[in-house]
Image (cartoon, rainbow, N blue to C red; front, side, top):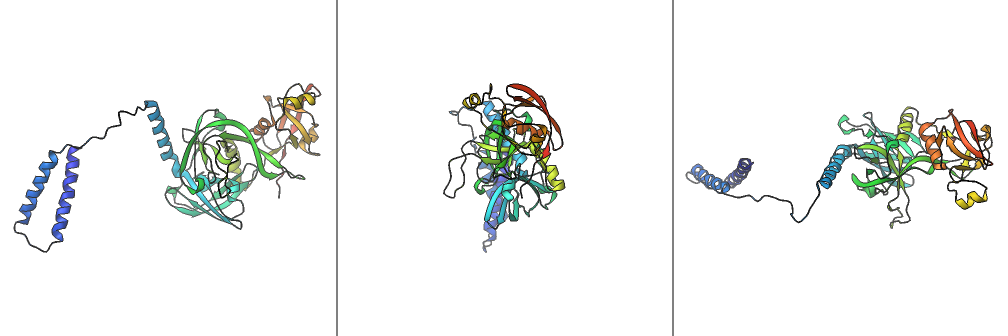
Length: 388
């Protein structure tokens, strides 16, 4: 290393000397000998130089575990960031931005439906600076997913590896990468805060002003802000475990954008695995449909007032006339406590199971409690209606 540094230093000195000579019109006698003598003097000085060695600050103690975790995060970012893109949208309502990621080498990009809703022009920007025009080829308002197609050189398309969101555990580290406030390629670190949440979908139930529920939602405290929507949530193996969708907050900036409060939500990747192939093939995806409404949070006081012995279950508040639940004989006041042998403690768990494991036309076995008596009911799932 010392010899290489000396040679590099000498090369620079030689170039500087030659440049000076080239700029001069004076002809010096024995110029080559003078230059050689000068170079020899410089070499002798360099050989006697003691270059300082950069050492870590001895007053700062860093554990090997922390350094190892830091290197793991750096390696993760370097490996996956080429597949994370920024999305700019123009519509009649103005402009917007979001994030997305490369799904395959055919040019399919996954993002949120709300990022590209009503878009008249979509521009996708890669970390390399490459840009392409995007076309929406499939959208799903229930899960808030959309698929774009772009034309790009093969080297730009670095597909993300998809993980298994069912294997996630609360407390597990995750990272979010995206385009918050237009700051492309931003990475944040957090943990899985909860699993199996529900959010309102963007699909309105027929004959009502209420939205259907979207299930199997991941909650995280990784920083998610406007512009992160559609970007990946990843585990420490660099596998996508969710698609960042929304935050819950009461703080807003001067532009009215919601600010991170430590409560973010992502669509589970196992939902993405079911939905995206269908969006690519047909442009749409059909969800299972029960045709009922349930109380989202049942308090002990409410349960006692209704004469229920437990709050564990999905208490039916309304049955859609002519829907699957009505045809199966379910009634308002029935408590659903299980589905296909799996315990259901609340409506969120029921919807998450349906989203992740069933399809329209499937027959499910519901364990219910009616007037204090347990029963089993077979129900054939319908297809969830899509609002115009």
